[in-house]
Image 1: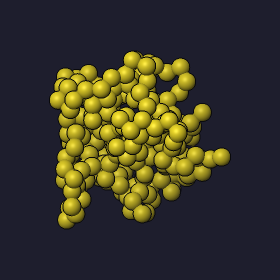
Image 2 (image 1 turned 90 degrees about the horizontal axis):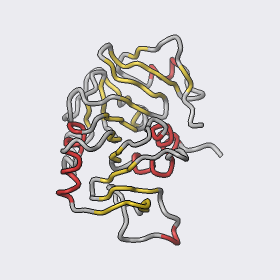
Image 3 (image 1 turned 60 degrees about the vertical axis):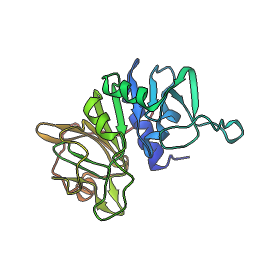
Length: 219
């Protein structure tokens, strides 16, 4: 059975991790990533709500209502995992101990600017921890759907209030894996059954498409 696009993106992101990485997972799509960590890969997943060592989602009959991720979904804890207060959680982040953060986005642009906390004119929940994460984590990966109801989410310039400037390193969507470089947005992989023309039509930003473009794979 084919994976839905959210789990496809989550699994592709998980394949970017390396042994020993400490990885913060934001709310939304990134919370699916613990279900897709490749076998044998030794990483530590952190939720800013105060948990280190997140594991995959539990089956319904094994839910522990005291264990949940940053998005409030039920989670599991791997052996050696721990819980702590919010102050300790952000000390971990601000102290530079997080190698990678994976976040959702409302908009990203070709300069690596990120807007993920506010849609102008709509009620907002607040900044969350994203500003701390994009400033202090070693690498920032955006995981999201490529468009919003058909409208582009990757721009030449963000129009929404920014969460951070020049902070995004990699964008993984249901259509492509894109690296943010000084030259612009370089498409490293394109999703199966997606053409370059379709990708360009779904993206406002200019894209650099190399001759050796690969097809995204989750296996």
